[in-house]
Each structure stands twice: as structure tokens, then as C-alpha cells.
Amino acid sequence: MITMMRPFLNMDMETSPLGGMSLGFIEFVNRAGLEYLSLDGGRVDPFAMRDLSALVLSLRNSRIDTISYVERISAEQNRIMNANRPIYPTGGGNSPWGNPPAPVNGVPVSPAAPPVFGGTPNMSGNQPVAPNAPAGNGKSPFSQQGGTQQNDQTPQKMPEPELTLDDQLEKLEELTGLGAVKEDLHSLINLIRVRKMREDRGMPQTAMSLHMAFMGNPGTGKTTVARILAGIYKCLGVLSKGQLVEVDRSGLVAGFVGQTAQMTKKVVESAIGGVLFIDEAYSLTSNTGKGDFGQEAVNTLLIEMENHRDDLIVIVAGYTDLMNEFLDSNPGLRSRFNKMINFEDYTAEELVEIFGSMCKKSGMTATDEARDEVLRYFDERVKAHLKTFANARDIRNFFEKAITNQANRLASIPSPTNDQLITLTIDDVKSVELN
Image 1 (cartoon, one colour):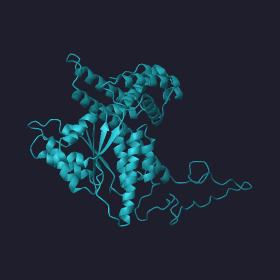
Image 2 (cartoon, rainbow, N blue to C red):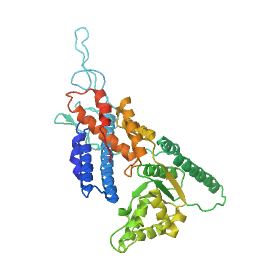
Image 3 (cartoon, rainbow, N blue to C red):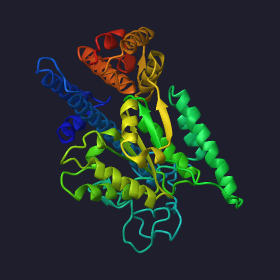
Image 4 (cartoon, rainbow, N blue to C red):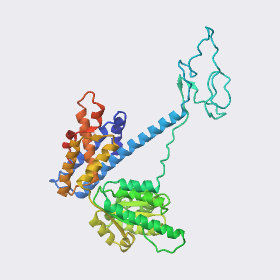
């Protein structure tokens, strides 16, 4: 599906502002899937609905990641081109050296020798010497070919700056809501800091497990918090790398004897030095019938957690009730995952705040009427306690549908203004419907 979306995404990125064809494709996949799942008398298999939601979320995340990557590469190419651009003296004409000197008393003045940018003076009179040009390569960034300048340098992707502990803690505080989660994590961070002080001073201390269980409904920020926590643990010296490896049952369980253990070991190896985040971990033990190897994955995981206990943290996540059943399914699970973090559902006000953050990040703005309508819609949705309610995922779906509605509305305007292109109105949000 991601491959099928690529042509639409490529066309989107060739337009300015960014087009909406890839969003339309995702919406088509979502609607087609819902219609297919509703054929059987209106009854919907919750696991099939979960798989469809995962597919749509994967498409949206792939779209966002691709756009972000292209924007970073474009910015880096512009930076390199600007850095390598020669600095010419002021003047006009076709020469990089400016206009010729003005005659003095009607007598032409010979032009001064071209300036040298450092290194050996160029005696040929044809080309300036490039600043800090490497000697002996026979090439110059000023060499002309077909009347255009050629640059042999290939842009390199610059590594992102490493975040400090204060940066990571600020990211945690900037998350909307999650008051109880932040309080629990701050207590845990303080505990680790004090333990580190004792360790540095040679004081004895008891062993402590940092593996955790994140419990809550979909879209409550579990994965986001896990990613920030991995960075915090690296800054505190608990982990050596601080990466987050996200996986679910499909990434751990195979269909034949012996393959599951190998798959699980490979995933664990990729997470050493960071955090292994297992979403919907309860699915590993929900089917213990013949031919199911979920328990093999659990047993292998427990062994690998012990083998790499000094540089690996595992976080299991899922619905609260199902996660309690998962932890009770094996005597070794609850003792290792003895820290439970509960993620409450977002309120309607918090969801509107997230909506505003999405608008800001996308360079959009919403009118007061539009925000009031979003609040009204989600106030009713939260109070309805729908099984399909997905918290922040719902607000993301809502936002993307509103963007599509705006694109359809502006398509009939020959030349929309800048304000129209970045503004969501009540008409854009009022017709949005979620499952």
C-alpha cells in the first residue's frame, strides 16, 4: 500500500503548497476497508478493524516521514550551495570582477588584476582561484561547462544534534495532558539520579528493574512517551544508545517451530542499548492453542532480558484489562514488569489543544468558529464512550479530513489568497465524520 501511495505523494511534493492527493488515497483506503468490513450484516470484527487502523496509521506515518525527510534534504542542499557560492566584489556587467574602472580625464584606466581568494595567484587570467581549493585535483568549482557552473560536492545528510537531559524533559512536559504519567516518570527519574549518585560514591544498593508496562487505550501517547524515555535514560547513563525499537506480535512470532525464538532474539539484538517497545503485548499470550508460538516468544524474551539486563529496557503496552491478563500468564512477567504506568483518555479540551498543535506544525490556523466546532464534536464523542474512540489518533484523522475538505473547497477558487490557503474554517471541520 505504501508503494501504491508513492506516485500520489510524489505529485503532492511537486506542488506548492503541498498537494492533497496522497491524503485522498489514504482516505480511499480507509473508506474501502470500512465498507468491506461492514458487509457481513453490519458486524465488524474488532481484530480486522484493528488491522485496518494499523494500515491507515502506517500510511499516514510513512507520508509524514517522507515529507520530513525530503524537506531536510532540500534544506541541507540549499545550505551547502550557499556555503560554496563565491563572494564576488560589487559591480555590474557580465564579469565576476564588476564593471571596469571609470575613465580619468577621458583616459581609459587599465583594469586592476583580478583578486586572489587565497592560495597561489592564478596567472592564466581565465579563472579565479577558488577559496581553500584543494591543490592538485585539477578541478575547480568555477570550471565552466556548457555555460553553467558545476559543483562536484555531493550533499551529505547532517546528523541531528543530540538532545540533552533538559531537552528531553522539556519534550515530555510539552506533551498535552498526561499529568499522572509525567508525575510517575519524574519520580522514576529522580530515583535513578539518586541511585547514580550512590553508585558514583561507591555505596551499596539493591537491584532495580526498569522494565515497564504502559496501560491505556490507543492514541494516548504511549509510543511517544516511550521514545522520549529512551532518550532520558541515555542522558542519565542507564542506556548506551537510547534508540527505540517498536514491534508487535507480527515482528516476534513466526509460523514454524524454532523460528519464533530466532526472530525474537534478532529484535532484541537491535534494541540493545535502548528501549524495546512491544505494542499490544497481550496478543502474544491471547491464543495458547496448538500451533501458536506466542508463548515461545515470551519465554525467549525473558531469557534475553536477563542476558542484557545492563543495557536493555523493555516496555510492554496495551489495553489495561488485557495487559493484566498478559502479566498473569507467566510467573516471570509480573516480577519483571513491576512498574505500571496508566495512560488516561484525553479530554475534549486536550484533544482540541492537540488539534491546535497539529495546525501550528503544518503551518495552518483554524478560525475561532472552527475550533469551537471541533470542541463540540469531540465533547460528544468522548462522552459517547465509543469502542472505536482512539484519542489522539482520532484528532489526527479529524485534522487530515479537515485538510482534505479545505482542499476541495479551495479547488473552486481560481486564485486563493495566502490566508485562504492556511486557514481552516467551520465549513472544513463541520462535515468531518469519524467511525
